[in-house]
Image (cartoon, rainbow, N blue to C red; front, side, top):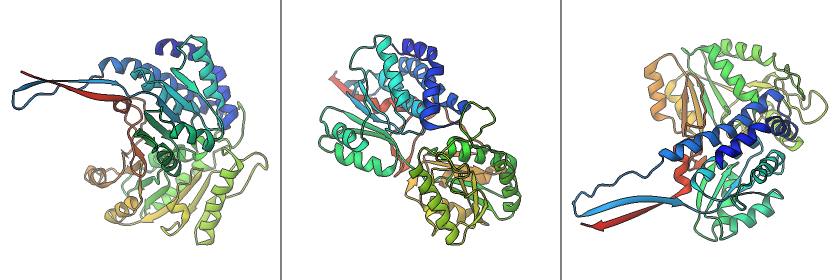
Length: 408
C-alpha cells in the first residue's frame, strides 16, 4: 500500500504543490521540499520496516529463554502544523502506515487543502477504510474531542509548546503515548575562527526560507565581537538580494507570513526590541507591499536577554544578533532556555567544536553546516519535545514491546 500510495502521489505532484503554494503562500520552488519529504517518508519507511525488529535478549542466569516482540500501539491522532503541510504529514503518515497503526490526521485550519488531497488519493487507490482518516475543523473543538477520546493510543503533534501542554491535558482521560515536536529558542553561534560566508549563507537560508516559519530556524544569533561587523556585512548583502512576492516567478525568494495576526506578532516583537534599545539594520517595515501579510527580511542588532524577541520564538524572517567574547559565556547564554530543539555552531577549531557538542543542551547540534533528512532522527529535549520524528527511531513510538519468557 505504501508504494502504491507513493506512486499515485507522484502522479499528482503538480496538484499537491499548487495546494501548498496557495494555502501557505510560499514561493513555487519552495513547495518542492514540502512535497518531496512526503515521497521520501513513504519510500524510507516501506524499506526500514523490513529491518526493524526488537533486539535479542540474553538471560544472565541461563535459566530462561526470552523473546521480544512488538505490535502496533493502536489508533494514532496526529496534529499537523501549517508551516510545512505535506512534510509534516509525511513525518506521521510514513511510520504509521509502516507499523500498521490507523491514523487520524488533523491538519491546521490554516492549511488543510493538501492534506485533503492526500486523503482523496488514499481513497482513489482503495486504501482500506479507517486506515488513514483526515479531519479539519476548529482546532480547539476538534482537537479536544480527539485528544480526550479513549480510542487513540497515541497523540502526536508538530506545533507549539502551549499546544502540546493542552493536548496532554485533554488526553489525560486515559493513559496514552505522546510524541511531540514542539517549539524552540534556537542558538546560532559564530566563533571568531568561523567560515563567515558559509555561516551567513546558511543563516539567511534558514531565516528567510519559508519566511522564517521553521521550527529549527535560528532565534538567537550569537556572533563573536571580533567578526561581528564582517559577518553582519555579509548577512546584509544577502538580505538585500531577497525578493518578496507571490506567484510562479522564480525570482521570488520569500512569500508572505501565514496570516496577518502572525505578522502583527512578529512586528510587535521587533518594535518592542527597538523601544528597548535594539537597532534595525534592514527591514522592520510592517507591510512593505501593502497587500496580504508580507513582512520583509529583517536584521536587528543590540538584542539583549531581557527582550521578548530574545526569549520567545520569533517564527518569522527576523535575524536577531547578539555579540559575545567568551566561549563559556556564550554557551551559558545558549543553554539559558527551557527549550532544546536545534542548535548551530560554526568554528574551524575541532577542540572548540567538541566543547560545544558536549555541553550544548539541545536535541540537535549541527556544526559548520546543516542537514535534515528522513533517515536522521529529529528530536527535542526539555520543553521542545517527546519522542522522535524521522529515522528508524520514530518507529519506536508506534510499536508496543512484549517480553515472552520461558523457563528452560
